Length: 309
Image (tube, rainbow, N blue to C red; front, side):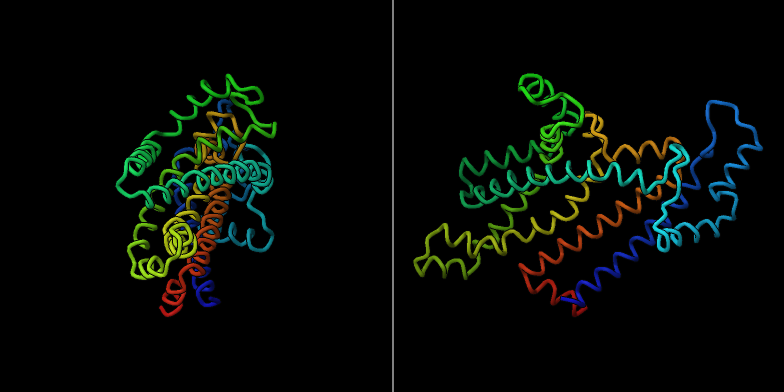
């Protein structure tokens, strides 16, 4: 297991290096410059700002200095558009995105996995077809359609729920539900496929022959292997819920991290763009690592095979 985790961490470092390299040069290739505004700024002022933010140095020096500061000082730079340290911006907005992501993942697991198990147990019945049809609708309907519908039909008519805003304990419910529906649909289909594959194995038939109840066979023998595809999906899905929730955050006016991607690109804020990209990259790598560890616990062949490579 140690070699398995070490190998995944080394792969993650390579991914972070590639992510930083791509983001750095794409940020430099964006047209314009961070200090171009509607107001006429003198060239002397621009030169002073470039020197202040370290943008006057040669490109190779900038490429090396930025990650060096992150490693030694945990310094992600200062946002050129907001005038605040990128680390503070991330620290302020990440808890909101984390709460939203945890709520969305809870809805996804609580809805998708039971639906997948029921569909697998009732294979090719009207229950199976109906649940899978609902799951397909959940995959196809985008968040920018579901969100406004929930605002109109639920938030406007249920006391305690707001159409938009963030501050009350219940404000995360509707955006989290909207964000988690697509993942719930994928989980339902993955769980159904995984459980069906396990239920067709010889050891399941042996368990039935021994007189075990269907419920015990499914819970004790079927889910351990049947949930492998779903567990493998949960890691990247959770990271995607946190990092890719810009549309949901915009619809429900949630002050999360998704907004910073777009704002940084529009204002050509290199430090904010690279800082948020690297933070999300690190988050995705860690979620994938946790997912791989859980998969290895459920199926020892996974970690043994990885370690042997």
